[in-house]
Amino acid sequence: MVHLAFLVNWPDHFIHEDSAAYIIQAEAILKGHYLEDTMKRPYGVAAFLVLLSKLFGPHILVFVIVQHLISIGTALFVAGIVRFAGAPRVFALLAFCLAALHGRIVHYDNTIGAETISNFLVSLAAFIAVGAVFRKWPVWPAAAAVGLTLGAVMTCRSATLGQAAIILLWLAVVLD
Image 1: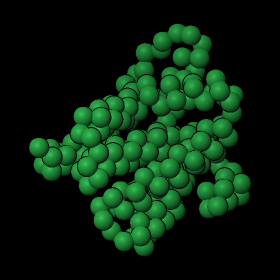
Image 2: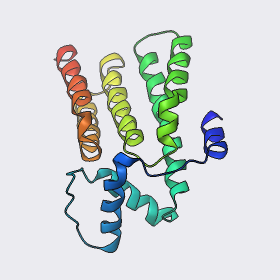
Image 3: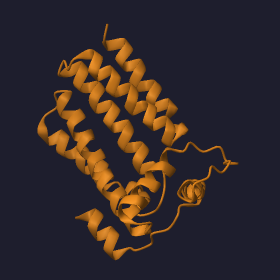
Image 4: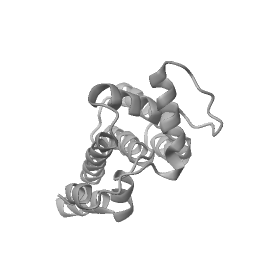
């Protein structure tokens, strides 16, 4: 409901100044030609924007609504991680609230940016990793899923390299 209230009552939907390169890349893909990105941004977010444009139309409100939904999914993964680690449900609820209601994240969800999708993919990778460790999910499929998810993160936002390294290092320490 907070995300919906933000979407309706604070309609400041805009392209975040750091994300103009993704829009330029998406426009180039939609026009059918590759455009050299002078800022050297990965093309994952642009591909995501192109997919949404093809499915629902190139309206900024479409992108913003999907980002809000992805952010709620991220909060669900965070709560799942807390539960898989064995914490009581109240802590999982608290983790969900902190992840879903963080003011800066909700603000970023209300714009066009790379933060929402990279946060989602990192939380998905961590969720799978925690499931492999604490729930004893099959190691090979879990490793493949973590690898694919972290690979997708790298195609969206190279700044998440540190988070990916921490997840992989943690897995290397706790698993044989």
